[in-house]
Length: 434
Image 1 (spheres, one colour):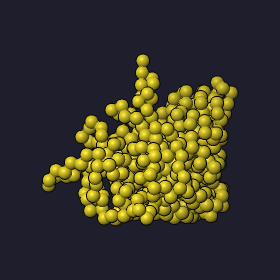
Image 2 (cartoon, one colour; image 1 turned 90 degrees about the horizontal axis):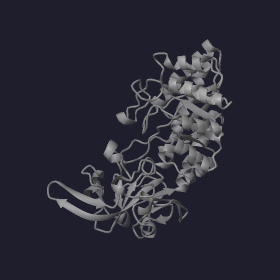
Image 3 (tube, helix red, strand yellow; image 1 turned 120 degrees about the vertical axis):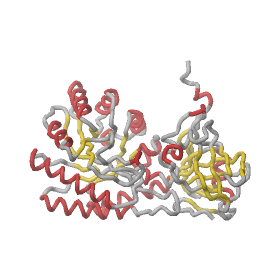
Image 4 (tube, one colour; image 1 turned 30 degrees about the vertical axis):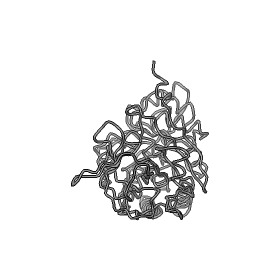
């Protein structure tokens, strides 16, 4: 039997996979496939574990921020903010979505390495609480726009702390060779702080770093906190400004496979908190307000994708192709990163996973695969295939490649389901064509 690691998943008396009490085969029948399914209960449980860790280890002096690039829609913004989290956005579209969901500007943190003037204007017009400045050009642009609007923009500086988080090269962001942020080692970050403090229409309130994604070690986060507090102290000592906040980013890993070495999130919080307290005491500085930015860890394991099995091609001594009615258009992560996933036949979830399959999508690309060498139950055409841990970076990265409509997203809780994003239709695909 396939190892099921998320608390929201189970197997019922019929041998079917369930999520938050909903039979996945019934969901597939009701809504069609492919569909994304998100457990509201699991999202809320993880949000609460983060907020509780701030109470326990930081005396409430901080807050988790939901990194909405993992999965951004109005209902998700409403759910996480109702649990006390702020929202991080990285584009005008994500910012607009959060605002439309009713999130106040003061609870939004705006990231991005190349924000347009239009995006910065939208942020200023809506009193975004923290615009995270990535580079000198953006700093100058933001100061100019804010001045034209008679506003003062609260900013943090995104810093490259020079830490390699030992993840896939495309998702490492804290080392020197990165498109993100201001370099610490060369003095670029300190120079940006010095320049910002001389400007009339920005207020420097903090520092920010993000070292990567899907990190399964505590040490990189602890080291990042120590390094960033060194810069915090230098700004205090040499520029005589004590910054209000320190944002240590996200990147906490999740289960994709049984073999993933998962670390409970409170253990990150406990060790980072101890290091922050130690370093602040050493420097004689006040403990800043601390933020972290979990995204994948909040929604990743709370989500699954359901497909219907189509044709099965068994090539002797080569491989078995199991075709599904989705593919890289609604989950491009295997094609991009060779990302691992756990797959199973949802209507045979209690049976042995004794069939080795390559899960193939329907796109006209030989690289359109969801997983290779996956151990699943023996498949038949018409079965429902479930791919686990698809809550993060699946809908967010979906496209209309081959003019495929993006699937609906369903949220489930206590045996009930509801649509939170309607599936696209063919009419939607041509809506903007002329």
